Length: 325
Length: 289
Image (cartoon, rainbow over all chains, first blue to last red; front, side, top):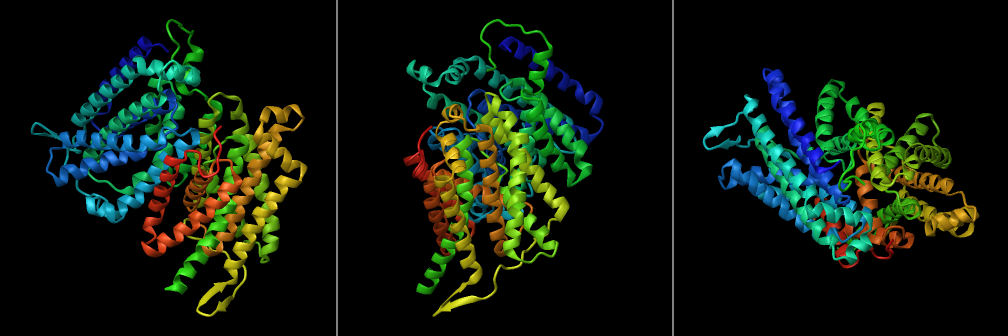
């Protein structure tokens, strides 16, 4: 898909999402699900940018999300920073940690990167629950139970009235997707395309894989941490349960449904998956089984996700560089 | 003090030997087919549950249990590889797709165990009661047997790789898949067989450790992470490297757990791993490529 098409698809998606409260606004539960969809669409798009475009097998996305959520909660509680600034500080913390993880890790290859980033994910739970975590104020295994709700210039967003928060998150999601689109369109995107086609040749021409990968890693960690902060101030409580494998796989389902490296796909995937997840929740313990089976079946049957399916059906319009590999 | 240290060393050696068995299985799949298996931990629990079911059928002889469990695990591993991983191999981005599909499989299997067997811990009978007492410290027969079985398993596997035709064809595929195919080695079969063998190895590890640590539906994640750390530490695809790394990790874990508490073992493990990878990105004995 070329950039113009992505932009049009994005505009259509966000346009449709923006009028959804007209239909669902009366029920708080539906609005809650929609806000979750928006939050996860940003996280999934960031992951797609790392994995699909930059070709880094990062498995630390949920970890950066949790880092962002915790740091925002702690910063706003400990230093009395208004939530809206705490959220940005959380993004900076997550981005900084992203650089710290990226520095040793991005020089590695394939499965090693997956290992180190997943290691960050696995290590986070003992850290947050243990003595270090308690010293920073994570509340140990109990978690953080009271987080100040988001307020901007004196206006407080309450979780009992989700519609204003929905539009705030929509704004965040639109800005994030615009940033991702700009990244894909800029020389970063072209550099990754070159690196993917022939890493040796691109390196000879002076494209530094490490530099670009580190930048994209820092950027996505920042955005993910930021959204994590917004999540924390929305739900009002945090625990390490988020680090369970369940959420991680949900995020992966989003990407599988949307298609890896097919940018707006992750957003569509997020809406489908989160809605599906809520529909399946009455099934209790069978829900993760179905989720797991869904990943297996979809990876086998739908190799390029929904966007790939649409592209197969619609005639190809080919001008400019093909973005998908 | 001295007795305690010797105790810690012994427990490190015993855990290290089982880790070695499991890490060798993981490094085998990666070395041969460059596929990364996220469901490895679930196969560990699978071994425990298969043994639990065999015991449930009133078969109380451990040798019989091993003889029954090995073919079952082999068959399961073989079928999973043929059905899920093999079709992906033809695609360009199959590496990431294999990781995704095995992660989905892991979630599926773990929660299936939970639904079928319940969330409560299952225990297996100890393999041999009793212990040797040497002066101040005590060595249980169970630990000795775990150690002997794991080391024996690795040695048998090494013999298989070096001395049998099938084993040599596995090594040939690991070195050069295209070349192996040209000289008539059935590549697809070797891929499936190595996957199945690694399933058997981790399943055996599951049975051995289940007597000490119980079987739980989610218990495999810890094992996956440890095997993963060991293979990366020792060098992906290097069996000798994983062997050394497994004992280093076992010792490290035992000492850190003894001196600082169990919460710190994972953190210490990753600190060591990250330092190693920062200095030597290919691990202790790995090669690039």
